[in-house]
Image (cartoon, rainbow, N blue to C red; front, side, top):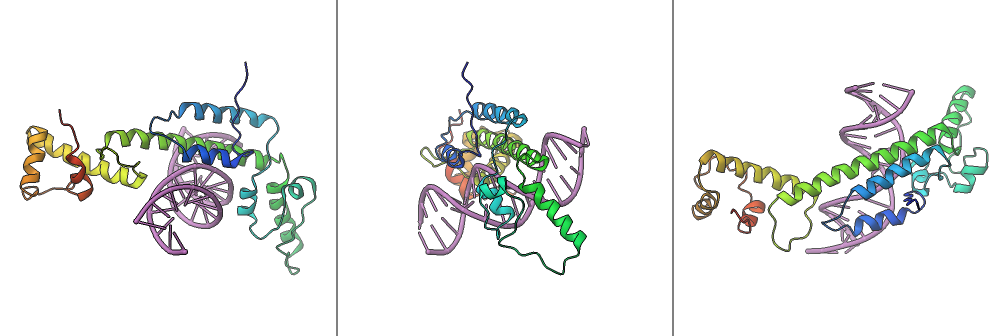
Length: 205
DNA sequence: TAGGCCATCTGGTCCT
DNA sequence: AGGACCAGATGGCCTA
């Protein structure tokens, strides 16, 4: 059986394209499965840090991946202060080596942590996707942002709570509120232009 | 072109 | 000790 493998580090543009093309019916489980496969691969050879990751750690150092993997530590962009005490320099050197030496335990742990973090963000995003499906939207509205999803959900929950407390029929309750300009609502947390504009598209029955 | 949104990496902190 | 969670930094894409 052929094993599918999606290596984020080997092809950083591929995963971005994946997000950019995500559709509302996207299933997260296959991606989670791929990440799990990636986790299992950690016991074997690790791909080198992405250039982005290296750059973020050593923004001033002009180092290539080849430099990182095959040569002893050399700082080109940042010069060590000559006044630095010998033990301090040694400590700094140790810390830098941890990040630069391929297959160093630090790199292995960091890579595993990155994968876990990606997996965690995927689960958060899947929850956002589910929440979006419950929030009222315009028929052809573009995908809600995360912050808009949260704000609309808060307002919508407040409205549903009021409807429950009123004991009225939802549709007539909303119609009445719209007619009266929400004047009767003392606790109109949900009375935001964002939500009320969308309420006309809600099918209550 | 600036600003909004997002994914990713990272190191720190907390928890089990 | 290792994993989960979090926030900051960074860079890419998209849109007004």
